[in-house]
Image (cartoon, rainbow, N blue to C red):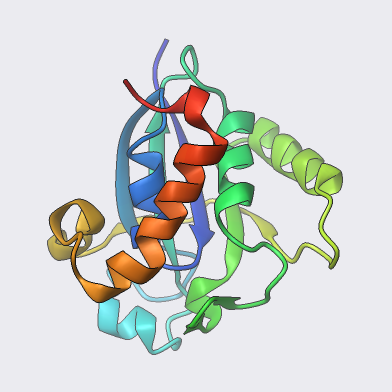
Length: 174
């Protein structure tokens, strides 16, 4: 069976990429941008908030090894889907919580999971049709793997990876 794609925005793409790199059934993860008005935006343009893009990861996965629901269960566990345009100290629409769906079935599953979530405040995660994906610059790819001692990685990314390892031990890649 061919691979499937999930595209998710939940704060800095370095955090999401570092987690999905460790999930069983994931074939590849690319950091990039989606949802804006400019073709081929740069990181600086996206960070300005002026392009409308979101920092996202595009996750290719083997549906025989993991499914879209499991991809989303991890997503909702590793970021805060109740804060609008913010994840921790990362503030702006480029850090908003969003699921970009690639099929009606993905839309249905995303909306179903959001209805099932039990948070003390409302979930603000948007569910939107996928738009063109623009791969982020090379230095953003595998950022945590290549820069584990960088301060943002130590204080923000590493705790998310640790939380994933603890809460999803059975889904860790061998």
